[in-house]
Image (cartoon, rainbow, N blue to C red; front, top):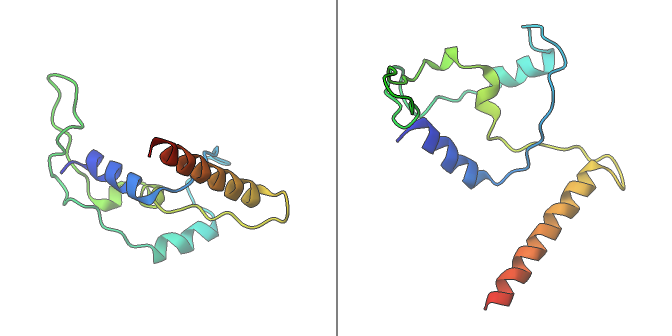
Amino acid sequence: MSLHSCLRTAHRASRTIFCRTYATSSSSAPPPAQKAKSKTHVTASSCPPDTVLSGLNYLKSQPPVLALPDEEYPAWLWTILQPKEVEDDGPGGRKERIDRRKANKERIKERNFMSTQ
């Protein structure tokens, strides 16, 4: 199983809300809050180092793509599939808006499903 298909199936299973943000600084040292998270979160990749990842190399006459050791990947890679936690900032806040949109999408899906029955 390739890394791409593993990430794709894990992404489908999680069904989380993602929010893009911009980097705040270009310093190589992470803030103290992120240091604590990276020490407690231990995740091993699904394939050992130097495994040929089929399906990732789509250009002709290129060497095969090999998996790297876990230490060579950036720390943020292991947190991509974790759900984002939005703090409750009161009525009319961001969390309420996200919950309202999520409930509305579920209502629309339910209504569309019932109309096909």
